[in-house]
Length: 419
Ligand SMILES: *Cc1c(COP(=O)(O)O)cnc(C)c1O
Image (tube, rainbow, N blue to C red; front, side, top):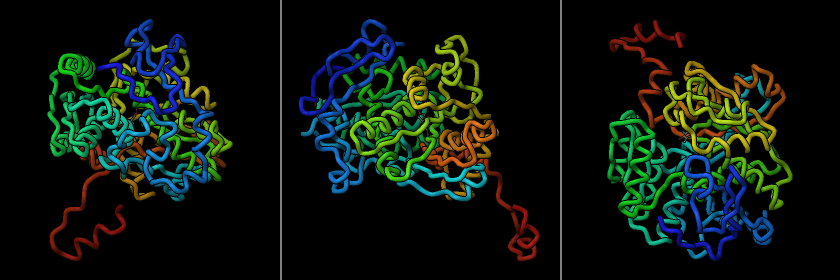
């Protein structure tokens, strides 16, 4: 990847290493040279005072309903063509019956399952494709268990770029079908996710592809930030106490928090909310790091059926831990059985069909409520990060079987009231 500077007209002030605090000018590094690729994750800093001049409530009222409405806080040059143009601005849905079941006063769902390719990952992928086009790339690549890949393939198809995707052998069929439907070149890697990741890194280097990878491409997290910017704007006059986000690699929750914080810094809101990070019990290295302050790299044995957050070696753990700490929030873990229950409850009580990793954030609210972390009088926003149709096997294992009946009315009558 080249270090070409393409942001002359954006408000980026520079890059900061989340590990050692070293600062670098925009465009000069992707990871901190001092700390290395595993620890030296960079964070993009914006000139918020400059953004304030034009990013106002009045200005926003006139802008398009897409994540690009926050261009002052995004790493795209003002002359760039945001592609796809319509990513973002997903709805916030009231879910009173689900709130009641979880034992809280108010629940709103930020439903990114309705995004173009069905997940929150469309946000960073659109930033990746927009930047790749501005820098003159013809091909993009990523290694992913699913949503990062399907979103990149979608955005590349809109832009007319070739997508090269490295998936682990265990990718759910729905996500694989999306990749092929969007015309991506798909490499199913016979190995672990980490091996697929390293292979993709090497391929980007060798073949000159744009690398869509949040760990080595700090600009992408700014796409995830738009989830937080939107929650802040959509709830501006009616803030939640908590925002619940499921956590795999860690950059989604870090991005959402950054968006909430920056909306206060630019003066559009005067509040922040506490972040609830939710991990699956079997794969919870960031929840553990939240307590101990460091990542235990020796524990990689666990498992969860929520494939999108099955991330035993997270690269953005420090960003996630810092975000949740700064917000005054907490981490909780939930079992696969609790996740299945949340898939069922969310569908039945709110009409939103969430993939397991998305329902994890709902399960986390239930767990946090039971533990007394979240009070009964609380108002919570849950990020629904992916659509249930992406992983039908996972969904069906949670929601059960239909009634099989002969074409006979009495047979139907016998089943009434059973569900
Ligand atoms: C990627 C993903 C997450 C977690 O995001 P991280 O940045 O990896 O923490 C949660 N839910 C879904 C559906 C995802 O695809």
